[in-house]
Image (cartoon, rainbow, N blue to C red; front, side, top):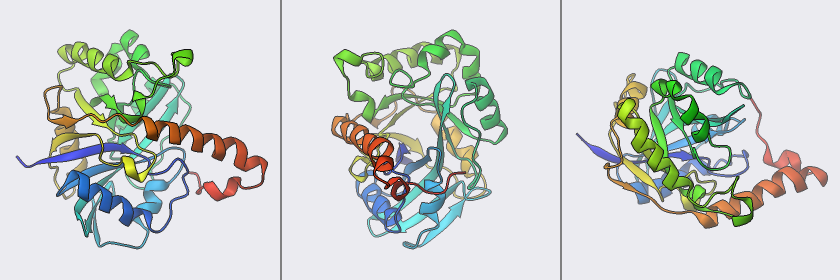
Length: 278
């Protein structure tokens, strides 16, 4: 077994406006923090940031999986593996799916059950991300545990979910990561294939690799997604990991989100922050 460090939930920026230099920059940071063959998830959110990044100029690379489900990039700071992710807003909360094919974008805004079914049909690796934070699905899954049979992992630590606001506990609770770990401990008894991930959920380059989970190195060929899924499902609370709170990153993200979504459109700059949407 070759163990590698994986930070599987990253957006790189709050904006979906990916620059030509972003791939190299992300690979350099990940290579320094995660080491040889460290893995990062580059996660779309109503955009194509993964597709834009992996097609941008820069370091030499090999595509992985059946249709660019991932990419191995040979950077100056080390070789880094990037896996495609998509985070979905469902009617019950957010869902993270890893390993989808490039240019494959599942439908948003449907029920969690419908989204899980479509992700499963497309061979996606299904993860409950920040389950007890803003837009999390933890409470819903407590009442609908049968859905967990199709999940590969629970995000037991989310770097940006460490930020809390006493006056807005419903959105920004104090103990979101603790509650996720407790629920995972309960769920894994009935769902032993459920893995436990620590991720940064970063929206900045300085957050990449701050939180990670040790995984077995997946296959670098056509079986990339299947072997990555097996590696994720083999994790538990005893797996080597790093849990780093990213309060600064969370605050920066919320400020950037307000500027991009509220201020920029009003002053005619909204198009500066958008890529083509699927």
